[in-house]
Image (tube, rainbow, N blue to C red; front, side):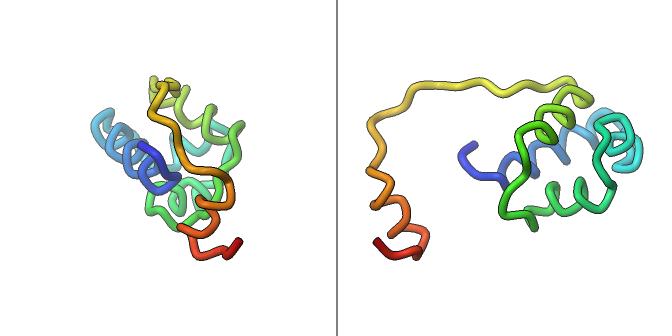
Length: 85
């Protein structure tokens, strides 16, 4: 996974697998149900790390960092996203 929408999709799938409702997860993670819903649907450009870690903890998930091949520079990443140089 490399994007916030992909993380949201994975969290939603795990929540459904566990048979939990959004409201339950949101309450346990101390985030609003609206924010959780938008995160799961990929409608948030950013989802704070504290919120993300809290939601993942409720779902019994964790982040794992894996080394990848060298990525482009920050300027190249901005150009890919249409942000210019």
